[in-house]
Length: 433
Image (tube, rainbow, N blue to C red; front, side):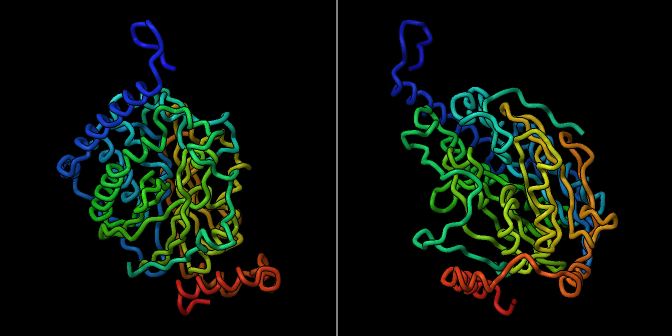
């Protein structure tokens, strides 16, 4: 029970909920106005002309991995200016592909009037803070730091809910946000309420802004991930990918949720998609998806050459702990990996990580599997590297020995599942082995 402002007694929970519901409705109206199409167009027209990045060839491409110290955007113009500055710098470095971090869209929470007060009611981190809860969205409110400084897709579809197989999960069984033991049951406004309220406006900004930036700078942009609702009303952690004409090539929902995301009621994705471009095949698995061997083995079966991985690691930075991610995955399933990292402080959570570009050890000059890496784990940086797609294909065909899987064991012990998954891959990628 909340205490009334005059101190005369507690406010009934139903009244408190009604008050917060009205505040949420008012916030929706304010955000709708701030993100109206005219406001976004006006912010984009104020930008300087784009920098035309150098052309990618069929065999070589320069990629940029963004490490961004997040700050809340008070206006759409603030966000547009920030994103353009990052793309502009990447283009000036010669990159034709740029990858942004996970939860890039959290900056747009700054559009909500009184967001810090609302966060205290809705965005509290369930459970204790734990380094194992990496890639978590933000927790309790605190002052944030400012930053300075289609036809081309192939899909692998996992079995449906009715099938006996379930995808591996990185956390405990997800709990309903309304289950008896859920920390969110007693919340007046749940995080899911806020994310669902923001979803159409976040989606509008992401699609409009990054489409225009991709077209202006003639770059392929993986815009990072955003918490948006799908067609069925489920809120997912979704990455957006745009080509150099500004066309949305597609989106990728995060498959493996961390505990906070599951507790809050986010929905995991069930599809991995590959995107064809003139210089190679791309994919955008999200953060925790790179913790699992199977994710990248599926991407390899889809012919992916470059995995653009957005991360947002809400944990103390530890180099060896970070190795659980994309570096070992590209050794097991040879491809290039571009990791973009969210860093800085937001709503009481400290995000750390090092943006970088990784590759199979044999394809790196220092024989360490790293082509480029940020120097810090808590500041804004952009790192670039040149990728030789033909060299990767040659390595796969002539040098790499696939000793990590045993199809004969799968056929013997998991025959029904193996046959179904093989059929899914064949339907999604006709003509590929």
